[in-house]
Image 1 (spheres, helix red, strand yellow):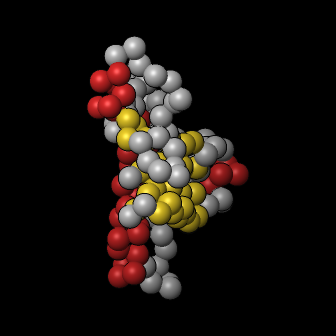
Image 2: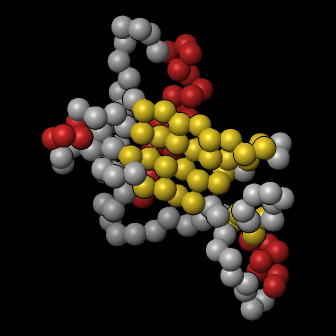
Length: 123
């Protein structure tokens, strides 16, 4: 289960931005909404079953999905595609010349088999 995903210095994201699936400590007037939309976990925060990403055109919605896809592909394929001489092609934020020389950051926090994990890297 995804708890949060953070990305920084990637495409349209200069500073780190986090997509959090942690549910706010609020109760709906209709309790069936909480049952259908919130997962209660022991020793971890309550989590949302889904989230919506919305915003104006060119505000970064697609880039957030692209960042998640980049991290997934990097983790799955890095052992066979990355060579010591080959570069890793993460697209940094380009509107600040200092960022072009800095690494892109990716981090995910998730629960698997009841244990909480945090995994991240900078490229």
